[in-house]
Amino acid sequence: MKKLLFISLIITFISCQDKFEPNKYNGDWINMDEDGGFSSLPSIIFKNDSIYFSDAYTYTTKAKFKINRNKISYFFKNDTVINKFNFSSKDSTITIGKNIYYFLKEYSDFSELTDYNLIGIKSKEKVIANSLYSSSIGFHLFKNKNDSLNLKLNDRVTSNLNELSYFINNTGIHDPFTFSTTIYIGKEVNLKNLINCYIRLTANNRNKSLIITDYNFKENSYSIFYDRISLWENQLEIFYKENKIPPVPPNLENYRNKYLKKYSPKIITINSSKDFNLLENINKESVYLISINPEMEIETYLKLKEKLIEIKRKRKVRIKTEFVL
Image (cartoon, rainbow, N blue to C red; front, side):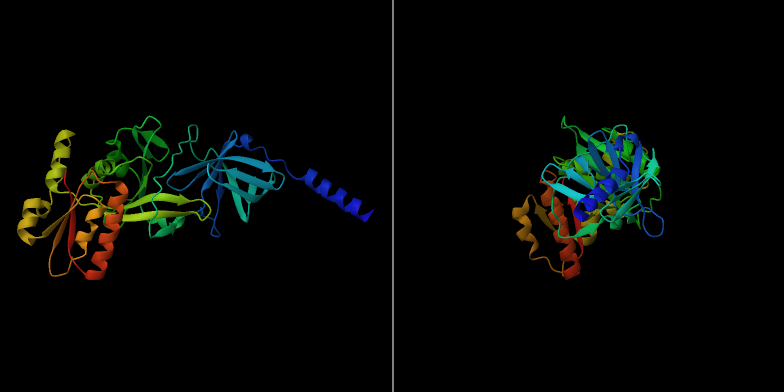
C-alpha cells in the first residue's frame, strides 16, 4: 500500500511539472554569472527539432535534441550528451545540469542561424570561453556548402572580404596595441584565405590575432594559436592600389630591402613541416627572417608560428616572418 502511495505521489509530481514547449519561445536562453552579467557559457536557441549553442562571438554549434521529463539529450554528429533538465514557467527559466538559463525575447537575430565546423586542429594551449573576450572583436572565416569563402561578422554572413575593414572600424574598441582579433577558422580554409584577411587587418592597424581551430563542447574550451601578423609595406601597397584605397602612412622600417640592409638577417625558407629541422640551429647571435610559403597547409603554418614563439621565448632571439607572395 505504501509503495502504491509513493508511486502515486511521483506520478502526481511529474504531471504537475511545467511542460516546456521550446518553439513558443522566440529568443535566447542566457546563463548569468553570480554578478548578474553574462557568463562564459553559450546562449541556447531552440528551433524546430534543433538546439543551437552560440558563444559571445556567435560561433554556433548545432545538435538535435529531445526532452524526456527531467532530462534533455543533445544528439551531435559524433556524440550524445545527456543532462538533467527543468523548466519553470513562473520566471521563464530552464535549468540544465546545475546551470540556470533566463529567457530573453528576440535577444539575437536567429532567422537564419549559421553553423559550420571548425577546422579541428588541436593546439598545445587550450582556453575556456571567457579567456577569449580580451579581444575587442571576433569574426569567422569558413567555406559554405558550395566551397565559397565566407566571413561571418556578428550575425551577418558575407563573401565580400572588404567588408572586414568596415566591421573592424565600427565594432567596439580596437586598440591594436592592447587587443588581438579573434578569428574562427572553418574546415577547408587555407593559408592564402587567412592571408587575405591578414592584409585587411594590417591595413587597419591590427597586427595580432588569436586563431580558434577547435571547440570542446563538454569542457566549453577552445584550441587556440597566437599569431603576430607580419606583412611588408610593399605587399600592403599592392592591396591599396588594387582596391583603390588611400594608403595609410607607411612604416618606413617595414620595407623588405631596408630591413635586410639594417639587420642582415639569416633567411630560412619554410615550405612544409619537413623544413622545421632548419630551425634547430637558431641562436641569439643572429637575426632571422623566416620566409613562409603561402601554399603550405594552414595547420603547418600554425604549428610553425607556435614553434617560433617557443624559440623566441627560450632563446631570446630576434625573429621576423614573411609571406612569399
